[in-house]
Image 1: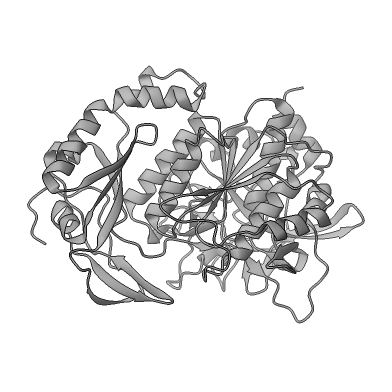
Image 2: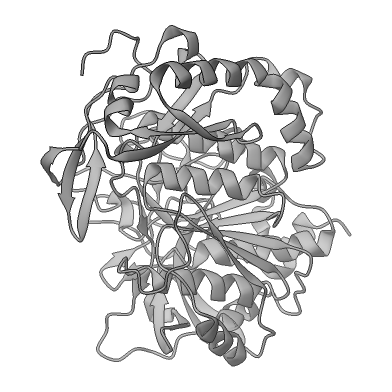
Length: 509
């Protein structure tokens, strides 16, 4: 569509991959988008050092910082015929609604419907355009494209006869986390489909002999707790809740349900970070996709939400993927999963444990059941300072990059978690289990120390003895991938947790 306004940097991307267009979106189809503002240049200079005292402090600061930006966006919306539904200064977010025809004219694009398994999505190709009056104020425009953004990192046991596996409380005990009381903490969990039932929670926590945690569903962009919604994600939701609650008894669990789109994903994370009602001190993400499938504007918007989390003392944990070092790609190259690859996120890889009584007798890299732990080197993010001495190899592009994962934990379905879904107990694994495992560990440490740990990368990399170093196995897909070794490696990161040593390293006496 003809539009002579300049291009919005980072908004260019190809049409949805693996789908075919079935026609233009009708001009009268209603659309709601999320417009994220850029952080103001020099804003960090006026902020107090360290985490903000509260989310309210950050909100008040940004209401002042972005007052002119909101006025400019309001003028753009009025001229374009769009309605402002919401304005959230803390999240730097403006939500706009209009018809497809109005959106196409406002942003200089064409919208098409695409056929995908189980339904139809909306997509576009190329860049978006904005008038000069707001171009330098806008970071991302999300919601015009509704193609699926991510997959859950859960793997069911596929053998003829499943082993006994472990309850989440068993895994906590094996790693040295017994007697934990996470009361006063809230764990935020991001879900892009599925739902949970009270009956499943009651059965699962009854089996673990734990009090039923306070679980609350938070609706994002119209998505709700909807078990049996056809997404196949109920097992993911159950795994996240039961692992988080089983490893961090007493913690409140806030589950943020959002559509599986880039808009839904970013909106869910920014809402969780700035949720002044539930106030999560740690966030668990078990969804993701290869780095090369994201538009730059989506990564930038989500990355700034992760920076906000660090400023607010919130730890973010994300699964590193279940498709070995290629992350499921077929181009003959190594890939890593996003958002686990973001430098502000604790990337969580997978192992297989063998236990006798209450002791781990062996722990190796997870590679079984048609999958294995993701891990490698980012081509998007440079090597962060906390990994400068970790021995991260060069990326597939030949340059230095952020190494994935940072930490690991039990993920192999052969040593999997007994989870209740739909009234049935099944054995599952995947790095989806490791993100809530580590989120729960952090919640317990937060409660014990009385102060949120926030971005803990530097502390973890400064305490390698607080981990069980995993030195056996690999995450190779064919010839592509990495082998476990002493110290950090691109299969299991620093290793799996040693509860006693980790508490000593991270919690002040």
